[in-house]
Image 1 (cartoon, rainbow, N blue to C red):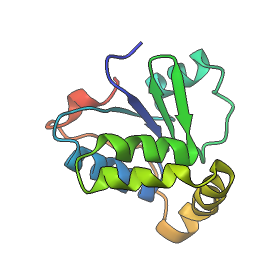
Image 2: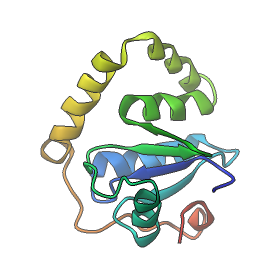
Image 3: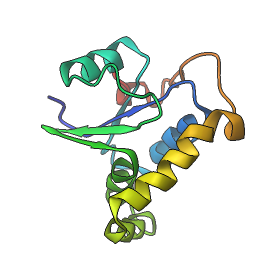
Image 4: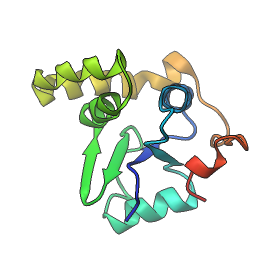
Length: 133
């Protein structure tokens, strides 16, 4: 178990890395911790929850025994950020099928639209304690 919600992201995806930087910049209270899915700790978390063979196009947020994925994970993150970002949680009323359709459209095209890095994100010393090691 983690004391804080864990965000599992694709460490090779430019938009995912941008999103992590965005959350780090807005999450001044240090609510979230992070791990690339491809890292050893990330793979362990996924394996423990029988998610190791799941599609890398999915973001996960793990909080206690609950796992949020895709658009629900994004909305969960936004709900925990300060105003005005938490107001976007209102989109939870949109049926998940529609939200996840839009999420999947971006996820499937993310490398073509935003590019891909050759390695997982390296955290700076300032935020190193926010990443599983």
